[in-house]
Image (cartoon, rainbow, N blue to C red; front, side):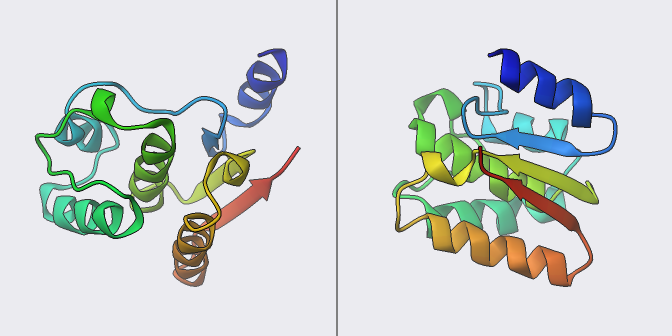
Length: 125
């Protein structure tokens, strides 16, 4: 936990951080999480559709995040973060926590967002 805390302290002023060891989500409704990330309601459908494509579970904006598995929470957090207004995102030990079939899907989405101008850093420790 000390390494996670140090990572947060060193990077949180400049980057939106996603750490695979601790999902960065609340346990409430998906729509509440989208509001916390300042996602406009017009973007809700794209995020839900992306999650439903990448995960082995179908959700909607009224689904409870607490009912998702750890990997599904990581997928949701990545899809939300990548579609947020954050221009800089760091993923730390993120892909080790995803199964082998999900990793390339999220990495493909990351590549799309990099092409759109986001700065994305992936750190594997």
